[in-house]
Length: 63
Image (cartoon, rainbow, N blue to C red):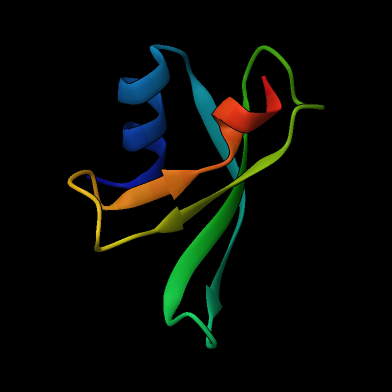
């Protein structure tokens, strides 16, 4: 599962990934994403091997 699929399954909406980078401090990939219906609502999604889905995000905190 990739980040975009993770978000779409979790929130039942379409998302776009804006930028992906590797964080050398946390040793994880992280991206900026937004719902396709609201490109101004930018948030972060990151790999998280400690979760069942493999990712965490800050979208819910913004809503």
